[in-house]
Amino acid sequence: MRNTRVGLTVLVPIFLLSVGWSCAAQTAAPPDDTTVARGKAVFEQRCVPCHGAQGKGDGYPFLKPPPADLTSFAVRNKTDADLLITIRHGHPDTAMGSWRFALTEKEVWDVLAYVRTLQK
Image (cartoon, rainbow, N blue to C red):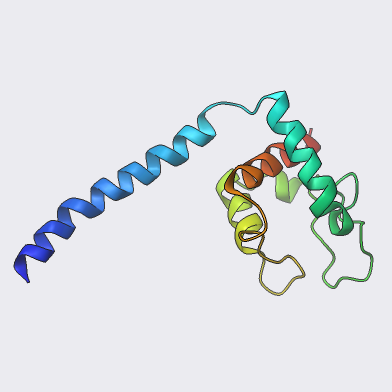
């Protein structure tokens, strides 16, 4: 049992560092035009019905609470990590469901890149 604990105390920090490095690598470079274009295509297909073509939350008017206005100050001030969590896992007590099984990890990052362009 002791050997297992020693092994975990060595492996867990290594795992956490490797996860951190991979996340940092994905956020280090600003998205290029190709990434934003791919994100726009996914957004138009998957997100426009609720968030609207401009991302203002005016797509489907009967949702309660209404979809987030992705151009708003509140969303603009969220970190990329917060927005990635919402895209992947949804938002409790809203119609925003999880996209983690419908979108690839690359598509999630592409959508985030496009959403950030809506805020400028």
